[in-house]
Image 1: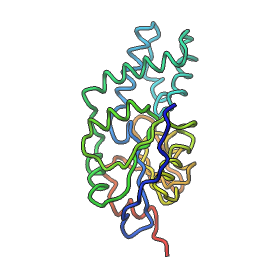
Image 2: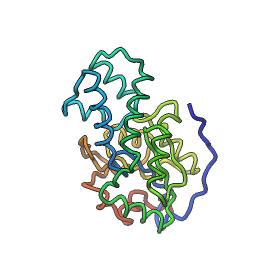
Image 3: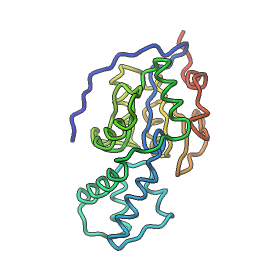
Length: 234
């Protein structure tokens, strides 16, 4: 497991609210990679003699890789080790991703909003480090102070650990860090960490719930809404 730098990153000015940081999921939230994951998994299993149909797709969204691997091995009975299967899926996905992945609708505007308003931001994903680094390289100029990968924490999503680690690296209160997610397991992780969550569902639906904001796309998320989720402290 990769050693994570746990030093804190200085907080900038979040504006006239209690907002300290924004923690953004990657796959299906920021970049449109869910189709790539499905292509990687379905093409590989077709080659292995176990075609997957669309009914299985929702079970594979949002990671973590360990849960995806357990599901696929249980479904197909393949005699591969979890490590070998994960490596093959990640390898196939990396090939598909190498040319870059399109941004989700409203993602470019979100990145600009965070950068222009100097809102501290981190990328928090269940994907492995090599995948995140490839996405960030293709993003070019971005506002993220750091990123947290799924293979850098003992327990990744749906556990709160990745978001708690990101808040800690900012020296921030999780309750004052807004999480932006697309998948139910990621939403669960953010809420378990005590963060206000904005859900922008991609493949799997995310139901409305008290204290949870559900949007149709990132294009609906503006600075006023973002700041309103963490009222100013008096």
